[in-house]
Length: 162
Image 1 (cartoon, rainbow, N blue to C red):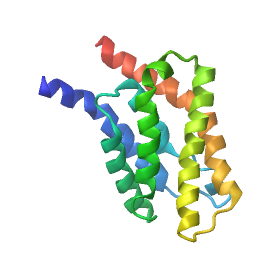
Image 2 (image 1 turned 90 degrees about the vertical axis):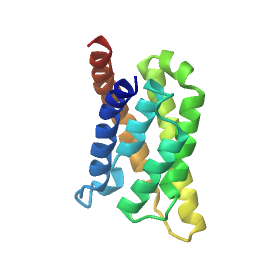
Image 3 (image 1 turned 135 degrees about the vertical axis):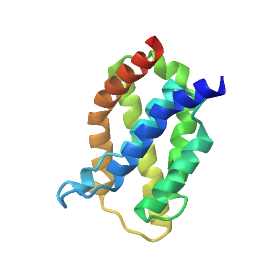
C-alpha cells in the first residue's frame, strides 16, 4: 500500500520540480513581466486531483523552496501558495465538476489572489512593484490553464487506467 502511494506521488513531484525549473529559468527582459506562475498552476491542478495527497503543508514547503530558489522574502510564496491551496482543497469537489470555461475563470481568481498576496507582502516590505508585474502573470496563467488542465488530465487518466 505504501509503495503504491509512493508511485502515485512520482508524477506530482516531477511536475513540481519541472515547474520550479521553469520558474527560475531566464526569460528575455520583455517577457519577464508575463512569466506564468508555473508552480501555482501545477499545485492547483494536483490539489484538485489529489486533495488527500497534496495539502496546505505541502504547499508551504513548496513555497519555501520557491522563495529560496527565487531569492524573495522567505515565506512570501509559502503564504500565498498555502492560501490558494487551502481554498482549492476546501472547494475541490465543486471545482472538479465545473466545465473548463468556468474552471478557468475560477483559476484566474485564484491566480489574482496569489498575486495580490505577493503584491501586499512586497508593499509591506517596501518593495515597489509595477502593475504589469502584477497583472502579467494573471493573464498568462489564465491563458495557459486550459493547456495545463488538459495535459495533466491526460496524464492522470492514463495512470488510473493502467
